[in-house]
Image (cartoon, rainbow, N blue to C red; front, side):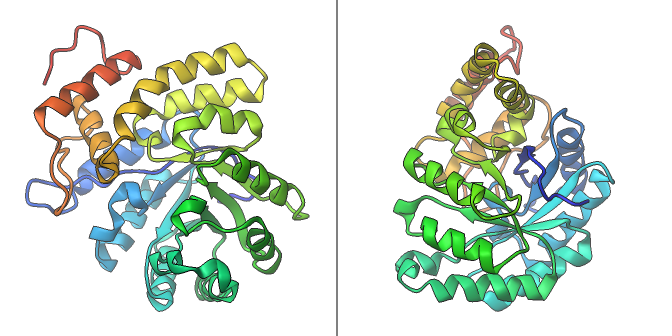
Length: 315
């Protein structure tokens, strides 16, 4: 599936494990099938942070992409996250993703780049060129927050778009309104269609209102239907409806994206377990399961969002 110019909702999926810590393939298929069947979902994103990909070995990552391809069929795209510290490993993962049937890859910057890669832009360019050549797949660029040291300056983003034509979209998580606006301008001026997919989870409505083609986020693994409502309302200029969707989303954002941040996707697994959509919410070690008190807070947030009935018994 050609994802060029495609917006809408791209949920970053979770990876369910069984009680022994192995990937639960049946649960994974059910999770991805549920997302693919949700109105407004245009692509399934696997092997990202939400999918605990750093805890998966190479064989497991390829297997997740294969399952996603089988579930997605022809109507939904499949995007494989590429998280690696060594460009050679990134190239291997990209080749695996192509063999497994991915339509595009989501390229994460190596953590090493936080040490000052902005001053050495050739590092970024070499990584993108190597991965693009290795797999010949369209690339979604992950724009992380500038304060993290892993975000691209507008100047470098423009250069990457100019010199790496296989970049078709930007997962935009810069965290700063001014940076988001700067990046929007870069995309508008690049001379071709590159989709802006917001990932600014604490202000998704605001970022869509500034301009954007869709949402790529882990919260889509739980609330893709709400994201669709918000996105469609903004697209048709219905601010009141967009605010209503945002009001439903807010309790989930507050309970998922709080300290410690390492538990954000762990909390989403717990939410799906409470909704009856994931049999085992436990993450893979060294992450720890969510405790009873926080589980109850997640349940209340789901009720407030309209994703569980108000009389649902605490579990």
